[in-house]
Image (cartoon, rainbow, N blue to C red):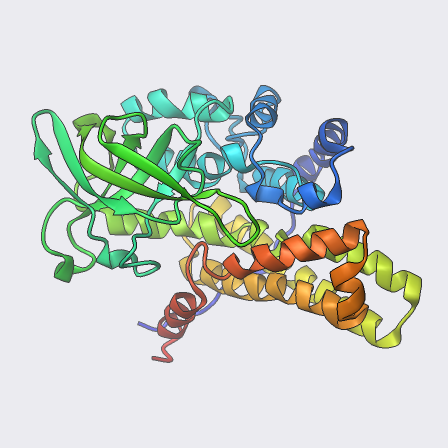
Length: 383
């Protein structure tokens, strides 16, 4: 079936824009003295106390109902808060996944028991979640996951492993995509999502250090791990439908265009000082591209606000956004020169170094470039 992309122009309502001054003041008070190379980590920087402070202000789980600890606001309110946090390089990694997708997933598909167990803690910035999707032999091809859950007395017994699991070593829970029936050849059938308590016996978590020296990725091993029946999200076998819905949240937000924003801000100021025509042209093009992608991202927020699942549009924004993010370090080197970029003892050089290393993962997390392009091509009837 051929689909049409829908990026109808959308405007953030004034009531949600009114959140900006408050969140900016909060950010300035807490991270105003953070060096640029720390802020450049943006949504991968982990600070549990910062997340708890966010929760005290009611800025986590904004779109969740008040009954479950949220504010009952829409997708636009969260968009404003997230955009301000990312633009400033705030350390939001602790609560990020729970706020962005785990909470909304539990609200949509979970029982009241699961909602009561997890949503208030998420909103307070006290429950941290990680994503159990990718595996060593499947990567972005989620339908081929091999981690299995078999029936046990009062629940499920899980065996297998996950990889590239961000913050698993610091999280309380994982939402794991597992095969509960059928065979791997069935692809989209027989998959389910379980909330796994990462303190359970039989779980081993091994951090993976990346090029930049960070260790937020992990490999997670499950050896006869017991998961209670009431930790199943939705219906058994509906995991593929649910995870597809979840990915619309993961792939469409401002983090898909703002991961290199600290470097871009510094580059804009440096180029303005030098007044190079070619540099101004290229940097201006990057800023214009980011502006267009932001408009597309806001339009997806509008559709999420209406309860829709813009999966194809989210994939396109993620692909275009990460392409832009990865181009910014290259742009800096091209116009600053290799010698200055590599050896200058200033904040820009340090941020450029770190962002260059971190940017290698931008097109991997949330779905590889090849997988996303295949999705887009199929959705548009091109393959």
